[in-house]
Length: 83
Image 1 (cartoon, rainbow, N blue to C red):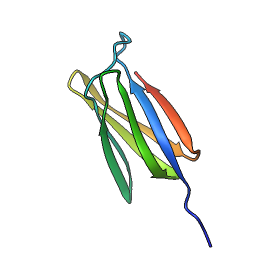
Image 2: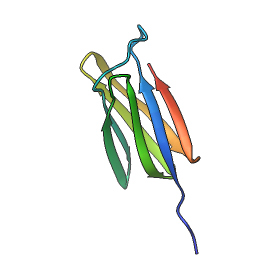
Image 3: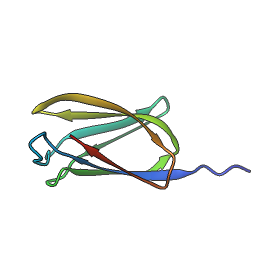
Image 4: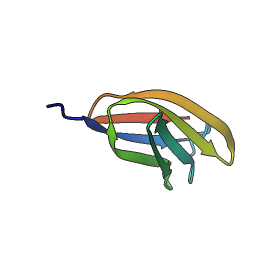
């Protein structure tokens, strides 16, 4: 019997000026999975209960170009700092 493993992804989004990005739209997806979140007033966002695997994270903000990052969820908790 195999048990799937899941992790949480926490992140913080800041402009190059170190100011937090409020309301950034973040998409975490793979070929069979997709979740969305928005950054809060401090630029923080989180995704909970993500199956282990490889994902693409897209960051959309009104004041910046779309940023795309490939990430692997393979621990119970992962933290990203995005600028």
